[in-house]
Length: 375
Length: 205
Image (cartoon, rainbow over all chains, first blue to last red; front, side, top):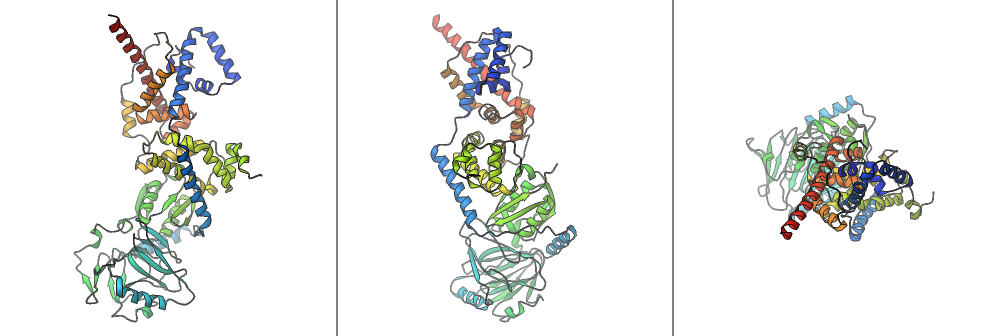
């Protein structure tokens, strides 16, 4: 303590004094006794300060949780821990073997092909028909899996080829556990980000329409009403087929050529349920100004010296995932990257590469481990 | 190593942390038992909504469990780690992204410093009940960050440097928060004594 006049506040601010009041021990007792011998007139101030510290300690600790609150927190945590143990881990390690050149090349390719498309299709009676066709045509040996999003938030599905699908609330997607052909069936609205593979086209079926892409991102919407199907492309290229007009589309699925109606960025088309016709929409109309567009479709994923904490917040909102990471270690690391059109997996790969970190995905939980502190 | 729950109760932070990193659920539970109550208490200085605080406390622990394998080996204080995580999480929930110097602090710093008069009056012993009431009153009306710093300093036993890291400000700011809070506390006492004196004078007239 400084030599000055030792006011009440001086004592209250002195960590040694506070420590003595809270946890007195022989050493400190001796020290403060000596102090009072040297400054006998401070006895009253010391006594008052002691009194203050005790009441401050008591009063700043008045908001402990009730036993019921503790129990409820404990149960929530235990439930999470148990769930984590039960679920079969869907783990993807970072491809640490990637070097930067390969990474850049892949990013460039995917970027060039980024596409967004809308589908408005109807479900109900005749939907089951094409769904049946889809199921029957699924190669033997691969079991179909259906995921429904019964939450009110977007839900991300990671497909076995590394592509990701952001399923809007109330929508469902059927897909094989492992792909022989890359084919899925959608009811509702979803945003697809497809890993580029020119030898294996990726097909999305909805009632009445098929969309074929080689590696791109696009959005599909097939509501239950009789609304027309609408397709809109943001960047890149997709081919759209009316299934009645192209009954052989499934054969063509393995053909990488994009025939049918080809849509390029900012173009869109509508499929009329009644006339079974696919109509190109005038270029003046942009589907991307619609208010109900998914966050993931709107998002540019264009980061410029953006703190990782903000980057992760963007991904969490877009994909409906929760990202766990050491925020104190990585939160302020800046990221500059353009990640539009890439599946979630590739986005995480690129980010983790930059952070020298690894990631795992389990359900909607992304866990980032490792990483270097940024200065 | 015995894995009965009781064996963890007396373990120190380092042992618990090691257990946690190895995926020992009992060590994890022991950490929760040891720290969740004071952590919640701290959360109550950051947010008023008890459901929000509960959620944030849960998430901090769930994250620690999920990230157990990547947690750094040597930890000086689990408590410090948890507090810092909780503060960041609550800020995230509340959507405050600008990290350190925000308006509230700048306003705090720029306020005219209160004059500190010499401790001339002899110290009267104030009754505990009266002091308690006064401190309750003060804590309710202090700027949030002053109350937060007081809690971390008096209740949670953190050092000024740890508080600075938890609150994401420099040490000078922390000293400032505490000093201002204590000064208001003392002044409210002088004011109280003054008003008592006046009422006594009025009554005796």
